[in-house]
Image (cartoon, rainbow over all chains, first blue to last red; front, side, top):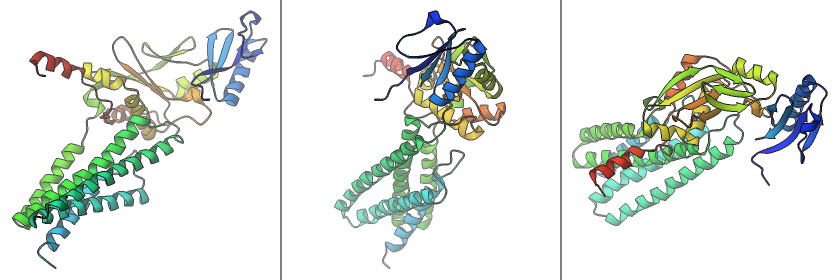
Length: 61
Length: 297
């Protein structure tokens, strides 16, 4: 099955904002969050989108 | 040698020559040098042969012989399929794809050029047979001029005004003027995008142009031509660096965002202006109104 768009992972520093149904990476600082997002972006061939200051998602386009 | 040998040789030569004139490899790099070209020259030769022998067939009152022109039709439809299949296969491996509309446009052009060759050969052989070789040559030149006129499609610069727009970020959103392009989260990527990215706003000159540039295939053709001419700053596995064209829903302007290797604004504007308006993308909503007004049905 081919999916047009799909959330591959979520990266957050705010435990309250954990989305369900996807892989979540908790980070302690914004810097760590950016690093994790950059790595995941490269590994998963997706784009890191910022939904808010403390929540990034990796989306496959 | 009989009375038809020379006219037939003349017609075939003229037809093949007209195919050669219409076969240009430009910055789009298609057809590829040598082998790709040989296929089309050979097919042009066949088309020239088909067109040429129709003349003597009419002279000999062998009217059923004309039916073999239907063979030509199916033969060249096959050419269109061949082009479409090849280009579609290759498109998957391009960093910036041509898109289906552009491919279809190219395939149609290849098919129709063969018909123009048949037309040129037919006309010039008939003129040779009815009058003399000079009439044949004049007919050939006229037919080639007509072919050239028919082959030259419109350019994007005829229907839009092109302006440079510096890409900017509003939070994580990338904007060209007020047109939203995409969301890029990582500050590192944002820096890269601002450093290498270039934006252009295509402003439609009228309502017809508005619908034409809204076509996704037409937009992809702009991105493809720009990326071919100026290079592209991107690799596989970096979807964040993909060139995009988005539309302003309010006034139909299209924002084209690209990451070229060579940041030359003047050249980019020329390249965008020279992008062909794809015949499958052309829309003419104003024609509809005109017809209603004149009560033509």
